[in-house]
Image (tube, rainbow, N blue to C red; front, side, top):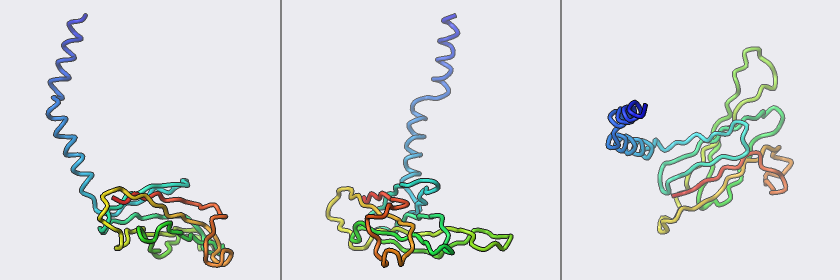
Length: 159
């Protein structure tokens, strides 16, 4: 009975030599480090997400948040540290609405990009946040206060 066991073991070793596995792993690592620079942040049903940006690069995090502008509410980003990142609001995308219904929701989209002023003297990884509030702009006089719970928080690490 032990004979069959060793046979199986040898079979596995023969099929998956460590050398081949190491090469495969390094190839995988290589593939992930060469990025397009645009990362879509998973937001669906979540309160928090994360994204990493390379300083002084064209990296960007895409944040898409569901909302309905007909209610007067919209997503308002609050950047914790404007010297590190800034947000650019892209055009609102309405959901497909075949029945012509009023008040159908859609998606608010934001690009989060590193600001040019990011100091690259320090090699340390810097962490910052952008908080997205779903609010009526006039209720907070255009200024989002921390009294309101953010609907989505994006943790950003800048390398």
